Length: 406
Figure 1 (cartoon, rainbow, N blue to C red):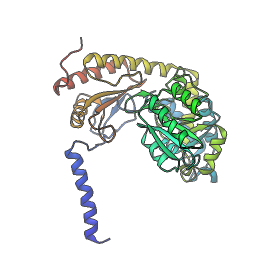
Figure 2: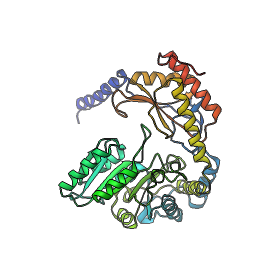
Figure 3: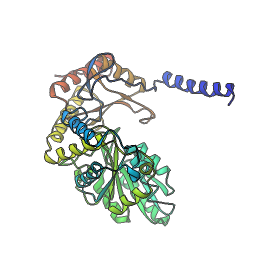
Figure 4: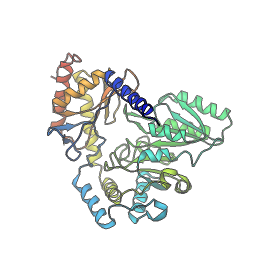
């Protein structure tokens, strides 16, 4: 490539970046200089209450989780330098896969380096041009990308709309497709919406479809004992494929998984490209995640505390006067609608000692900008009261509120 062509390429990228900044759509990164937790220290030395982590159960910086990780490193080493089918499978990986299967009520489990890989590698080995995938319109980007890698027919239903899901299923039947799979997030991360799995399973039974759910924002705390959205809706045993992450409630590091019947998992071990061509999950992560699952099986204390914090915050933030997406999930989208306003609001909260992030297009639809609050079992009531006061102050200063906390 000539020097002129290179300059044109790089200058074009810079122009696009400058345009994002002008539109208020440029995403900056906060740098944390401490461990993850209810409070964090940023690289400027400031201590802030952290309200934007996926650390639902507060285990990311938890000492017990850390000790389990260290113990696994001491026993199994730092890494495997291999993929699983060569020489990258240790006993800790098999133990974790069995523990996940038991926790979720599934037959078998396969581990991935990330949940993005689990969704990216699940469709192509299982479905082809004779089959159909019916996907919720707001499914996670990893599901969308995974479907793109597959030759199956693609059908999309309006978000959480059961009537439109049935229309799409009827279209699949009319097209004469062989196998059908309905795919949905168990919980939608931007809105905190919980999928209607009971109704989805009923439609799946009616039209002879499989059901797959992504449980990244559910495993560990949704349902009476934290098993997930399928427990929350009392449909355990009716879900065919579950994908999820170890990088949120279940310890907060990284790593993903797919759980299903043994035939499905065996097929993925033979044909799923992210599994066959990615390094093994680090032993430290596997060991710590195994410890987390053992801990959650013994007690619902962290799950219960999380839901208490969620109910309190949702009630109080509405009483202050903010608009939030309705629901019961610890993802609480505080709607600000305008992207620059969301950025200014997040920046002002930072000044007031609260860490949140503004979300805007293309992460959420145009005109639906927000700050997404995420509650944790690690938050104290005193911290939440302080956060609510900061929200009120910033809201008044930016002309978003006229009411006060009584």
